Image (cartoon, rainbow, N blue to C red; front, side, top):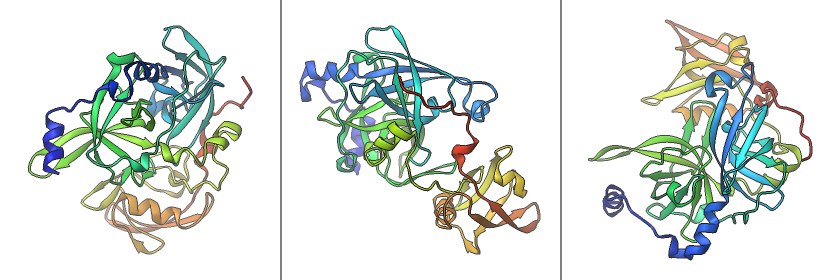
Length: 327
């Protein structure tokens, strides 16, 4: 670990010639710019904005582009810019809340070689990797995998083994993470931090592992979402402090709001079982069944302990998604 820490602090570099300079340049061409416009009445408009920009990766010859879902969910218009610098129209194809992946398709295929998938499960802590956004070599940055630990997001989101990388890449949304063979192993999700004992906290990025896409990709293309029962969604944004879970936001119109959950509530139990952190809270809720299942919570609301039953829902049904059509 000491060697890895020193390497991080020295801002490691890896060379594109590791898999051929020309091949490396071709790989970077597959990373595109995405610009999406979302209507102000959309559910995610207040939290994610109505103008969103990020990156995506061309994954086939039909025009499908993989990105992070929050860039394009509820979009009314999407533009994609490839290596030639000319914007082209695209449409939303699918979104998976469980992984965070989003999928779109350009009105005509871009003249670039689709990227090849690697195996994110084989990428270990300490390995050098490359982050790339749209813009060729100028938008590529050498980083290192510093952790494969669990990540629990405040928006009812949990990844078992994401890829944490450092130094942090500023424009992370939808950015590509390549292994040393030039294969795609992750998609950029967010900026986070990592605590190094004795040294303090460093900024880092969280990447969604590409292995999570492979079982659901066909469904994403044909159906817009994985064809499996959806998890129960409450509409609670939470944060963890010393193992305790506090409500920081309640989605308007959500099951949680209808049941009486309030900002500041401390969640104590799920169906009578004490919770130990944010990840444990999610697992206990999801273990109760599929979307629609009743979720009994014990919460500390002010100075009173309350028993609240929430009739969960399918998060997908709360979004403004345009009907899927062929391009």
